[in-house]
Image 1 (spheres, helix red, strand yellow):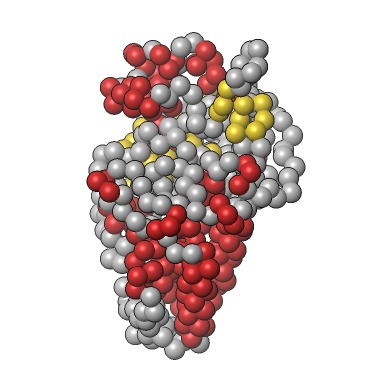
Image 2: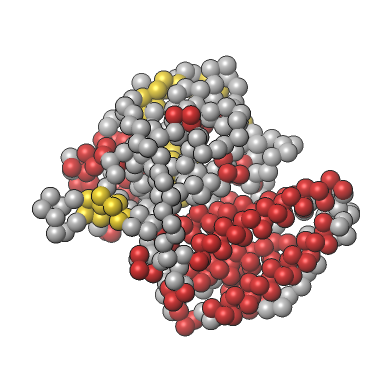
Length: 448
């Protein structure tokens, strides 16, 4: 079928959004000194150079032959930047910088891809391209946009691990004034939680966001704020990392085998009399801010929850606390229907680091729970699994299905580097329980 006039209009706006997403990722690579683009800041990840080519290879592989004519000018690089270099024996990657193309080759590859895609998208906007009913311009372009914006966040926490002398610091931006709040729990009455999207929804969603379901949730209490560094430090000082009773068998084995004794974003000074703790920010190291949310793995969050005699919320509990209301309706955002702005949270690339909890009182949900969007994702107790009626995207079958393995946990919310379009209630993210690098914190619930 030919693209309809409505498709063309939608595509035009989405093409502009795709170009804006490109600007976000391009700006990230510019903070890395050119001689450091072959570094590997996180052992489990590819070298930075891979991601420069990957974003363009993904767009090309997604759109060519579906939305745009199928062409191929460099199959070797297309494959390299689609999959990377597989680690030998299934372990950590061992490739060397010399195994990768030169920076100039990669940049030429990126530019050729963009030129070709932009030319094809311009033709699409004139209604000249045929598309399948299964692959509408709206669906495919949203996938390209959000894939790139997700990488803009994962790249940020990857570059967070890069030594400071390998990065170029942009001008510092002002931070919200500290608004300390009491560590209280908010009551959430029994009621429904809405998960997922309807198939006929006009809102874009990834395959794991379908099909919509309502879950009845008994009453519970949830922390008003994310757990702070100062609260987590008390857990550490109380011997939390050495208390076997607080950790599952798998979590304890991981912690002991890897010498895990503190959050990955913290460093303890070796020359200080009191061995002061420091926060390793994106561009500078500062004394540990006590009121910033702590970022930890699921395993560490679960141990802390055990220590305080509580638990992590389920995905449905988190959803009700964030988007629910006393009348049973589901809000568009925790604070209501107003579009997000700088008064509602630390998200949409607002900052490079978190800010103090309590800085956004206008973020409060109907139950008075604050900052459920922004300033850090939040771990849940729910294993990542499909909703009833799940159907994988036919053009990206492994996006979610490859991770329905019982080894990943749902995280909800957003961080300071999460794009606004992913603040929708149905959006789900997920990670393995021992992954420490993501901008993810937590809050606890009490079911009694």
